[in-house]
Length: 73
Image (cartoon, rainbow, N blue to C red; front, side, top):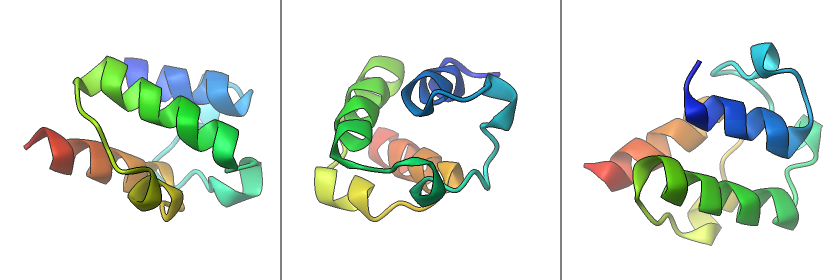
């Protein structure tokens, strides 16, 4: 499991095994605090900054990873 997914598990307070590409962010309190924490996590794991508005539109872990990788390209 990647450090990014482990960090998401901490943010959402779930077992790391639950963090799969189709993990539903909205169903697990995808709020402003989670978004800010995820912004910091992406910066820490990928050394990239993602716009908060774009991050706020994410609905799954796959969406988050796509944003992080797109910014990393």
